[in-house]
Length: 496
Image 1 (cartoon, rainbow, N blue to C red):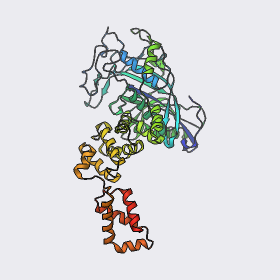
Image 2 (cartoon, rainbow, N blue to C red):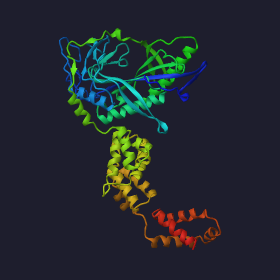
Image 3 (cartoon, one colour):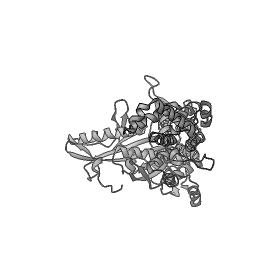
Image 4 (cartoon, rainbow, N blue to C red):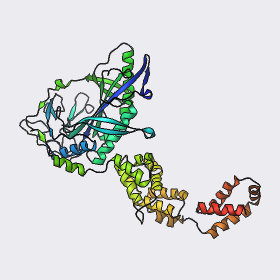
C-alpha cells in the first residue's frame, strides 16, 4: 500500500467529522483462448447450456487436468503490459469449497506463488491528472459454473459451460480513494487488456467482473474493516456501489456499531449493497498444491521474446500521438482509450495521397462528429459505415477547399447513412465549393444592389451588418461560397 497524501476533496463529511475511503479492486478477466484452462472444451460465449463441458470440467473421477499453453502466454503478456514482475516459477493450488456449480468441490487457482507479481497502472484522471496504482498480483484460476435461480419456482439450474474457463484475477493495492479513481482504474485496465488481446473486457457478458473492497477511516488513521462487494458487472455500478457502501459504513460506525468483514452484493434495482455471507479467510479454503499439476516453470528467454513483441500500449501511444500529430494530451488520451479508435484515427490520417491528412482536423472530426453520431445511434466505431479512408478523404476535401466545413457536415451525415465516399456525394449533390472570384463578386454585387439601404447603414458605422451580408451571399450560393474568399471580397466591396 502506497503512502498517499490525504486529499480534502476525497473526504466524506459525516456527523463526527470527515472520513477517508480506502479502495482496492479484484478484477476477474476471462482469458481470450479457444479452449479452457485445463481441458479442450470450447469457450464461446452464448452457447446452449451445458454444451461446452468436458469430463474434466464436470469433475468426473480420475480425469487429469492438462494445462493450456495459450492461457499461460496470455497471463504473462498481461503481466508484462502491467509492468509487473513475471515469476518464472509458479504453483497451482486447490481452493476447496463446495457449491452446486463447482462439480469437483475445489477450484484450481494460485495462492502463495502466482504467475505474476507486483506491477503498476497509471490512472488517467480529469484535468490531465495522473496517478499510479499498485498491482499486487495476477494469478490464473478456473472459473466456476453458473447457478440459475430464475428458471424454475422451486429449483436451481446449473450451467457448466463456464466451468474451467481461464480467468486472470488481477488484484490491486488499496491505493484508490474515491469512485472516480476506481472507475478510471477499470477503464485503463480494460483498455490495456484489449490492446494486448488477452481479454475482451466485455463486462455485460461477464468476461470482466469486479470485486470491490471498501473500508473507511479517519484521515490518515488505522485501516478500517473492509467489506467486499462481489461480482459487480459494470463500471457505472462499481462507482455507485462504492458511493453507497462508504456512506453505509460511516453511518454504522458513527451510530456506535462495528463493521463486520463480509461479502456483500450490489442490488442494481434498489441501489444498495446487501449482506451475502461472512468473509472467508484463506485458511477456510484449505489451499494446498494441486497434486495433478507440477510447478509451472517458464523460460526467461521465452518471457523476453513475448516482451519484445508486445503491441504498442495506450500510454506510449498517447505520448506518440501528442508528439507526432501535435495533439493535446486530452485529445490524444481520448483517441487511444480504445484500440479500435486509435487504429481508425491513424488510418484516416495516413489516407492522404502524400501519406498524411491534417492530424488535428482529423482528430476533431473523429472526436466531435463521429463520436457524436455513434453515441446517438448506439454503434461502435467498428460498425460505422464511414470508413477511416472515407473520413480521411472528407478532411482532404476541406483542406483543398473543395468544400467548406459547413458543407462537410452535410456530406458527413450522408456518409454515415449511406456509406458512400465523400467525393461521390459532393459530385452527386453539386456541393463543390465556389472559389471563382468572378462568381462570388457577382453574388455580392447582386445582394448589395438589393439592399442598398443596409449598405449605407454599414458604411455609416454599423459593422454588425457584415454578418447579414455574409449570410445573404451564402444563401444565394447555396452555402457553397468559399468563406475566406467571400469575407475578403465582401469587405473590399463594402468598404470601397
